[in-house]
Image 1: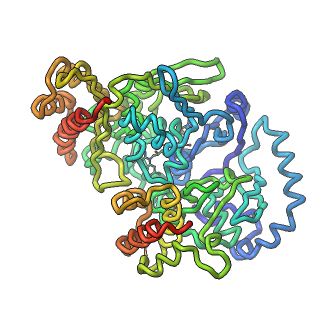
Image 2 (image 1 turned 180 degrees about the vertical axis):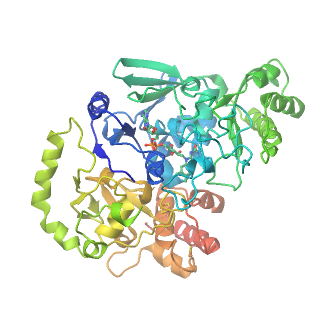
Length: 339
Length: 206
Ligand SMILES: Cc1cc2nc3c(=O)[nH]c(=O)nc-3n(C[C@H](O)[C@H](O)[C@H](O)COP(=O)(O)OP(=O)(O)OC[C@H]3O[C@@H](n4cnc5c(N)ncnc54)[C@H](O)[C@@H]3O)c2cc1C
Ligand code: FES
Ligand code: FES
């Protein structure tokens, strides 16, 4: 690991100022479960770490009024067990509870979670890894070096949103649930504050897969805001993994249903584990609107959600799997009562 | 992480560092002076290569120590403080062998920057027993044969204690879910789950 300077300011303003003062190679660090991990692999190489975890008041969870507001530093484990979230927004609670392990959820913040990086094996094969000896080409890790996943061992790779440069999956669960609920982030930067829909934080890989987020390097996410919706109680995060727990998604679906008896007024559907960014399935939502929810209409919505999916060599199974995941998620959510 | 960048200051070998817990205590005054200086010059931030003085409370005792900021909590415990109970399995948050408690919560010490533990309470497997009396979870692991080679055991026990305290040891499926961050290469899972269930059922204070 390269050496770095370390500082831990106690306000968001001081953090932004420290970032400017640090100059080239400055990075914010929260729980460190992504950044420190990748520094050990020599994939991330910050020259300065600005630790945001001592910033006061940035870990608050507010559930009053017409929105939920999660301070960026709230640990995943706290948000996952918040009573209001559990009762009224199971999709949010489940997306966190089914991610990582309790140890990691205690360390990781809901803000840092938005910016976790892909688990693509070729990307993680950095020079600091144990298998170094051969470092595979990866356009995300070394722009212009090529993509070893395309035509390689691509079982885990994306079937939606990939490009000729990159097929790496956007790995997070929480961002999928947030995108389904039209959440947005509050941001502080040198130029002041702004807000942005979570969906707009993520870029498609295109020819520049190393550019993943739209946030400027010096900007801090201070909070994640979820507008309240009555669809929240009829929501679910359904995650299919290689093992029952403690694994990233092969396919996942975040759904929330606004129903009039059996009929869907509005469905919100987003996909994880299969796309290069959190994937809102608008075609599937449109297919369900005004329909009775039955196993057949749920299956049709699943098929619509994977419109345009393109398999690689070993990951074609993900298309069928994701279709079924969406259908099951819809049926699970529909059974949840709104009372 | 290789030996060179493992966090021990230049000239301190792993061996002297392990035996160095006593020396650390006597350097307290000097280190506190350094701490003040570090706070005052917080802008611009310290350069790469600058060391950092921190003062975690480890198993109830202050452990002031000067570190390379790259140091993980796991390496600090094992290589500087001589607490080798927490194990390094993967060094990437994937196995749970390094589990310790920070301010009462279980964490993976391999992915915790030691710098973050300044002023915080760290509890390791060495801090669990009261004198010669084993902690009920340690005893339960023995009673239920919850280990084979023992490499994962300190992490399993620290995770298990937290699992009970969190209220996540209510039944077997819940125990399994909340213990999934701890991998056992020997496959002693049946005994581990039984030990945790036993402690939780008997309502023993953990
Ligand atoms: C073994 C393992 C298993 C995992 N399994 C899962 C899983 O199943 N599902 C899942 O979703 N995730 C999983 N994760 C990923 C984990 O959830 C993320 O690493 C974590 O949420 C990142 O949060 P953090 O606070 O640790 O971020 P950090 O590592 O501190 O930061 C990550 C990135 O975000 C930036 N950042 C942090 N905070 C802010 C902020 N407030 N504003 C702007 N930028 C910020 C940092 O600069 C950095 O680039 C797993 C991780 C590990 C190690
Ligand atoms: S050594 Fe920390 S989780 Fe494996
Ligand atoms: S007892 Fe050997 S790894 Fe668990």
